[in-house]
Length: 407
Image (cartoon, rainbow, N blue to C red; front, side, top):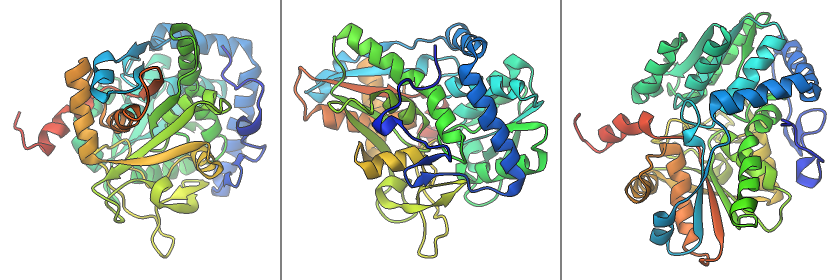
């Protein structure tokens, strides 16, 4: 299995040697981090050419993560939508319950190759934190996870799981106490500990090479799905839908399809409570280009260029920026980006649970909501593929709280 895209062409020919996806991406960091990023870039390039690295990663994805994840025909959900056949790429069945583990095992292997002895990570919904803690436990690496205090409150099951695997959780009390602030604190830690520490970023954000590298590790999702579609219904899907926060599951799902002009790609952002600033987390729909966490991409900003507060009931989508490749795909017109509000996502959460017996993450529920809308406009002989990025166990207590139910 190769972790790098083969035969780059057109939209796949990015980033360039400077980590630029068109005008987006790049590396906007203090000088302290430049050497670490160069070391990571060099080691990653060597790893892509190293057959033993690729074999070890492939073996881990099979025996530890549980890949390939199945492609599931959601027949009752299809009937409810009344249009295209809906298929789910079941990343929720991976070890740790989401797509995040695809990236953390790859980056943990790179940590060992670089001779680093400590790992830090940020997390919002906790799925990346759990995946990082899992990979670190597997390889015997100490792990520190930064997590906003508000996210710790609403994602307690994942906090407990991280602690069970030996990770230290550092609550972040600054700002909105959510994912943006957790990334800030992780960056500060990395600047002070760069000699022995690797920062496992969980999404396609941050300075080069992270957006490219995380995309490559996550593209196993789209590569498998592409092959499974050709095997099961003997053609490519007509439409592919995924939720977008920072954008790792969507980048991994979309990337193997970007040169297939007949495949529509739809990214779904968190529309929250409405279109007013502070009520949503939809930088591709409402933001403008700016620098956040080391790269240039679409960002939610106020009139002075300061990062805005954002909102989503989903901790994993509650982020004011997005990966630079998604920004590039938006401006190129290759991917359609839409937003989905809290209420519609909650309804889709219920619909999937009650029609298919699958409890999806609130992040994924945004994609399910839009997939139902889009499928209803398509014909029954067409196929719509959704990245079911994670399971919803972590969200159960927060959903109960939002509904005013006592447990």
